[in-house]
Image (cartoon, rainbow, N blue to C red; front, side, top):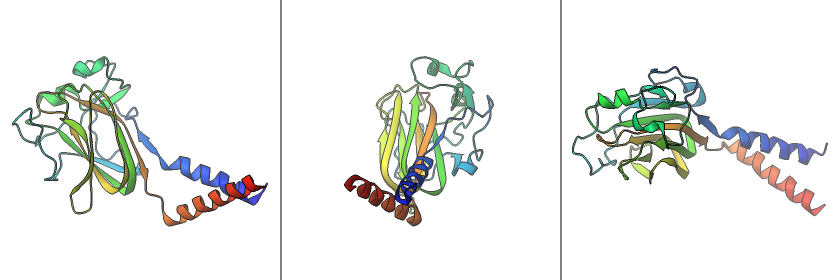
Length: 208
């Protein structure tokens, strides 16, 4: 096989391996989300420490000190109004019972072991527009990008180079669940070289 074709195939393999999607379906109902996905490069924790994320205007509760990290199955009874019309499936994060016990607006921090270039997440149970979304946080703890949910569905950010994302999971009166966290690491220099070689191989094949 042509060496340039081999290079192109290697590039395709490496590129397809970049994206990571976590759908939580391997977690048991009522599990508490934390470091279960550290091996995939993502660690989840309750709350956040970024001052640049403002509270929604819908409530004056402030940020929750006990944001729920409990997961629930769509098929079970602990999903509140999320059970229909949300587009989520399987196991989601932020149980209805957990939401009821929170003392303010929930948030979740996701720390990545390597910098990511893109991020997306699916939200369901969104009613108060502007109270749900994702914020990309740089190494100085500043917000560098954000995307708010316009309703149930996917929120995404691209062109990133960050190791942290904060999810704002609805306001105090608006229960929201999330699922299908997807991210793509920033390519390493060696990978960028491989991509360039693949592009060169494709050009040469086209000329031939």
